[in-house]
Image (cartoon, helix red, strand yellow):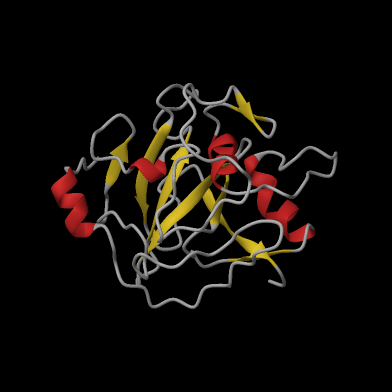
Length: 209
């Protein structure tokens, strides 16, 4: 694990991007904002940053304010509630799905009608709801990982030209989940960062994909 100070993160915060990403649509889900840097916020290879450290960006907090590099959340979950909501749009506090739902509107449902469903089903659920999905990371997209259990989702906050990406997520380092819930993590191209999980793909936004 690599823990980085604020000065180091400031120097490494944005990385150029040469990646054709699916556009993020404005209706019903992900909305693109003017970029702070083409690649967003990237940690260096192996980089990891846990919540509770002064160098953790305020925008990474659940319901936190978003910088220009990230997509706008139209769900109305803004500011930094204290304490964090006991649940948000039906997702229990600290779960990976809860964190992503505080950053992106989750408009798709499981076959049983549950909003979102388990994390590992999100890619199929979003595709069925008309969202563009695909194999390449994109700034503001939702990464979907599969495993032997319910899976995992994370919010993509940076993408490098190599295809590596940085995610903000809950219930990964603080498995359980338990407070303070959140971490930022560098992920290798095409990977998940875990031998127990596989990359299923990315949810970009409404539209063909």
